[in-house]
Figure 1 (cartoon, rainbow, N blue to C red):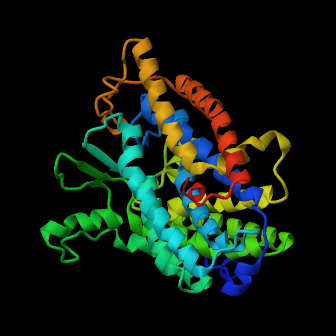
Figure 2 (figure 1 turned 30 degrees about the vertical axis):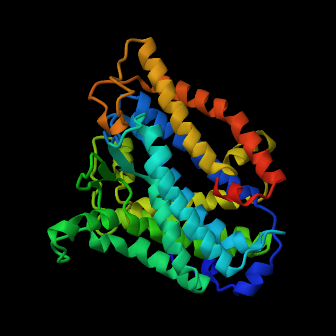
Length: 407
């Protein structure tokens, strides 16, 4: 994201803590929207015929289905940072800086525990130690722990650190653990920080890093800096979001067009203009490149500006999902996996053995269902989860028990 002055304008901690601000529907709506799209992505993972990260430009429907879900992780992590900045300013629920720091690191550790237990079981339906994917909840957990240390600094400085990590981490692409002088026994650390792939297995556990930490810590820090925008009066807030969204989107176009720094996968001219556009949009997520993050966060900032004027009544159900993201995330994995098991058993198990340590990464080539089936299952999952989300959102609104903030 470009380093415009507006989002990182320093806001004194005491004034931020004293702002009595109701919860913004725009943030919850955009968060809810990406949570809905996340269900589409994971339904495709479990039920579809495609690989985990399809990039075949010759299958445009599949490519676009995957591409629209690229917005999920960056937007969710950015808004986690925004929410952290706003924690001290909510009416009747103001937190001191020490309380915010304590909440960030304890919630971060809680997310790590969930990723390695409940979320792992949801992905694999395997209660025994085995394949251990380290995905978005893992990345958010560690990012919150890192942010707990960063928030001792002024918000503008935290935002600047985030921008430096997002804009500069691709300089690390050519480096390996050996280049950094790490001994073999510590080579895994570089995979955790800026890589993608398996870690050394131990005790029957096979860890796999899908979300490297450096760029995601950068995104949550950018969100923390951006949080100052949401303390501005409405007109100024929308103006700032429009400006930032347009500048970030323009940054993506520029970085991608020069076909040099900012993404390890250069785009190439294709036989058709549409295929060339898909190649242009085919940015690297593992780890997320500067182009990938600008491509997703720019439009998200514009959307935040648009819905800041109010969420239309027919779309307000999405706000409900955005207010209970962790419950929705855990529940949707179990429901999608169970739906995949039931569907597969019903038509002769074309997905293979789903109850024996299965993870979409292990899906055999040529197995699975077509996109219409994927979309039908996806719609059914979201509709089935909505009553649970509405009930829990109402519970959180009625009660102020401390443990509800961890769910």
